[in-house]
Length: 373
Ligand SMILES: Cc1ncc(COP(=O)(O)O)c(C=O)c1O
Image 1 (cartoon, rainbow, N blue to C red):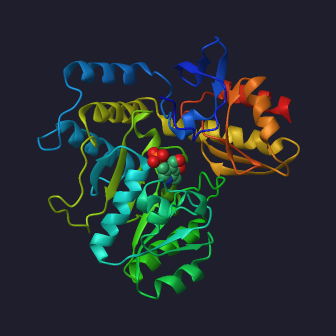
Image 2 (image 1 turned 120 degrees about the vertical axis):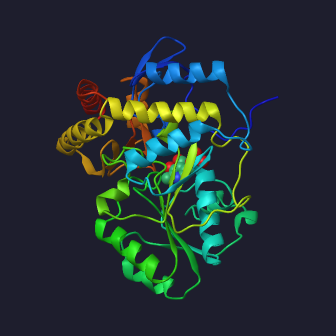
């Protein structure tokens, strides 16, 4: 059987990772400024993380959601304390798309409405409802066109209000910082308006923190720069440092009912052990402080480099936009300088390194990027 060919691959096989470095099968070492697409939060193969998963696998890997799993409550307690959302409820699933799928569904259960407002260049995943609110018609299949969605430009609150006024909007969904769209930070005032307007017109505000969350922006959640509290927050990616885990944080205004949401694998023992280990490491190693320090340094240095149109982002979620396509530069970075980076569109490089990136590694990154300019 061959693999279904949907990924344009680099001909590199990564076989080992340690901290912010990875090695390929030929023994080449790379600096990882991509984090496997914003997934590696506390670094590759962190000893605390490895031990937690190994211990849990030896004890019990999985049992179903029909019995008590106290690891779920431990995770919820730790996440509530770390994020400032200890009054919210937690629903655990396995991926980002699933998190948004459940968030949109919950909103619609709650207010009985159907339409969603999403934003231009948004990306929320590839399953039915999540892809429907993604602004990329090429990945929306006819069967995904199940409910009405209006895509609006970022940062124009009056257009949002004009739509909400019609009274049929179930949810407004926005990324904490747009990732796939090219690292666009929504204005603080705009986020505040979304909060006020959603409440005023009876829509649920969903903030997708799947890429921008869990410390990547320098705050636990990127929306916390605006001092708002969404009705629903979705997370995945870095939550368990590569173990497939997603979650929905749900405000107390939603009432749970048996059977309303559910999953086989979500919140399983191994997944919880991995996610708990990430929060433990984030706390013990003061990862947020590191993100701010190293992120500020990187952003400052990048802004001094010649030929760059714009450097955008917060913390360790950084977009470097050029006036020209960056394909050659990215290849040079990867194959000659041995640095993994991400892209957005044709002209923007995305940096999404592990949140434990050191100052020395950041300085190495700048030196190597300079060489490719
Ligand atoms: C903002 C955002 N939402 C949702 C997703 C989908 O997550 P997953 O691929 O885990 O389904 C992604 C993935 O890149 C994302 O960046």
